[in-house]
Image (cartoon, rainbow, N blue to C red; front, side, top):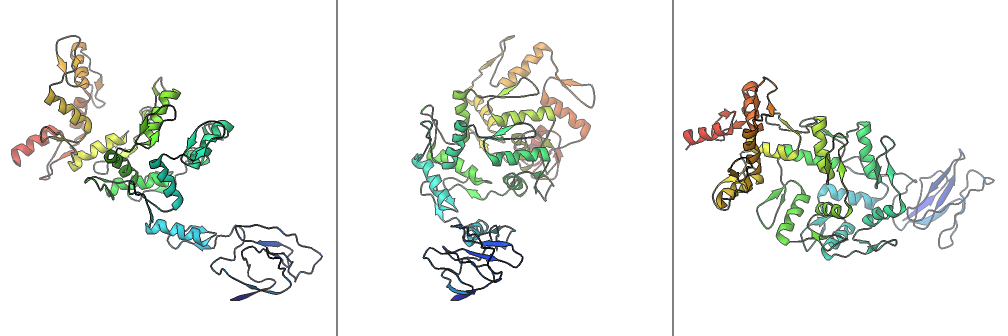
Length: 443
């Protein structure tokens, strides 16, 4: 097919060829392919109805009117910065057709590249190759300032900033970041910008990943299933992490010693034993070895409770507390004792129970001869000797030795009955009352 290129015609682009047009308003429009950008000055002395004569790679020039064979019709006639390819599912647009097709695969869920080691699938070959390096241990990206090597180029670039001193400081609070993307996300704390809103509970999130993660709370969806056992997960990362318990894979190696880890977060935590890095609280004297522990701790000072139960509207400081509480409503007890048929809502409760089988009582009272299988029981017991009652009711003046006793007492004021029988509609203020009801009524 042949196209005629004329003055004031639609922009035209062909591989290796750039057309400059002098328009009647004396504006210079540059039409170029994205691979090679060539600039050609226009001779203002020429008349306004002529084309300049740029030369392509074969030495062919253009006159006022020229016929050009278009070999690649799939390539758009694009103005620089223009994004003519728009996704029909969302509002994203792209300058190249292949970028649109790549983007569309995200909507289709098509991930053609599968890892033969762990079954993980990827949209792009580059991501697949990068992942494969975690299995092979290959680290092709080497720092030219020191001996460190990395499996990914992005990790090398991030590392290089330690040598160059390049960083991205926040102009609001002075906090410094290694990555620009981290600074952009951080800035939303100052601006209050929260882009992603949940239509179930109106909570808003600064990051799409946080929003998608939150949605699983409402849906209870667990689409990622382990092929080795019956466990299912709400996030692919959780499944990948779990699968390493079957394979014994530990792809993350410490550069200071020979220790290896199944998760990158465990490696980062371990690295602090070499660097001595700590995260101090600016409200009190507490110091933490993990940033997430500091963030969690700060909620004690701010009173922020970010996790809300959609069954009873109770709020919690920590996700672990929220997850444990949800099991009160669902009755789920995923932790089962291997010596008897008892099951528990929390792993810590299972470990505590296991001591009853082995008879272990490692916690001894210094005031009397009593010993306990759990430290928390020892602490509670020692309050008898000290006559200490640190937990005071906010509704009345009563004080209690144990936090659990205080919570039970508070329900007499609020009327809260969080323990629901799964066999009938009865609800109870205490778990012991629920158990007693089930034994006498539904046995």
